[in-house]
Image (cartoon, rainbow, N blue to C red; front, side, top):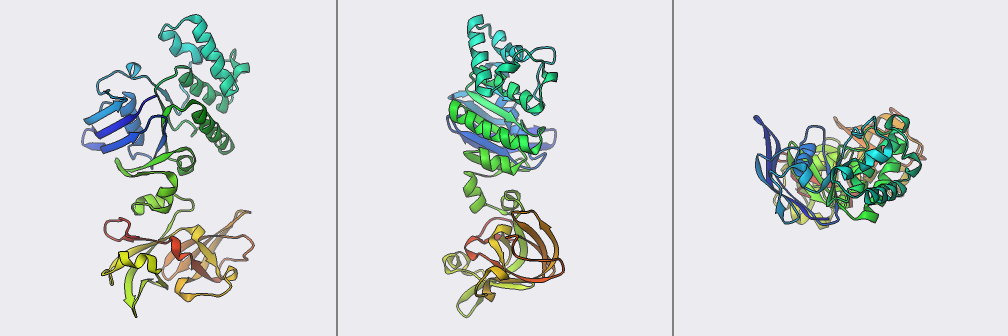
Length: 366
């Protein structure tokens, strides 16, 4: 096990800057997740740690050693790929044992490691099977097992669950959490799925256009996104963003937009002093909105008068798409609140959980 550190790592492909001055520390035994949209640079960052790509600038440390220029086989890392990368002509036993044989470990030690790993992953009864005889979940366990058996300092996971169906992904996420709890190996995990990021990572690095936008524990990223991109990427349904402006009136501070004027709580007004008239982006998560029927006494300083466009009943919740002024807003509501398309509905925001972003830079103000 070892700490992993990226210091000012940049990776260029011609004129394309795939990774832009990445600074990242993964503590010993920590499980961190790199998340972002396709093409944002997260896999390239992982491949720089693995040695499959050489940084154009900057240093990669594994433990106290700079590993720039060190071949992947000498970095004491193990990588699990999206496509499993199993040898089709080998049975499960030999797929798991392959890396150990290359390292010329004693036969009895190889057998002990393979059997222990197979028991840990619940595939001991599949050791004689070929990959084509296995389900997708079993193949992924074999791929993970091959990494575990090597007992590396660092695990690198490149979207390992993306080929699995939704139910199996949930199961495998739980198994990976349990594995990390048992093994406590330093791990980096790449995904475009923000649910995986939030459930697996001790810390999460949100990446966009090669730049790490925020690196923090999952709940901190959810509650205190550093900018509009992070706020919109983390959370499902996505945060609502409404064009607005700051307005001071009679000693109070409001955020005002087309179809709404919301009184801001005193605890955040210090951050908005002197910004009256400033154009901003107002953010509120769908789950922080409630419908009029669930509020005992309506407070118009917290409300949006909306016209419902579409509803999506999901059993445990109903997703409501509505218009406020000329903008759209999405609410995640209790399904027992009867709301139909083309109905006028008042939505109330929980003002303790609203967000305000600079309209020009996208950086968080509140």
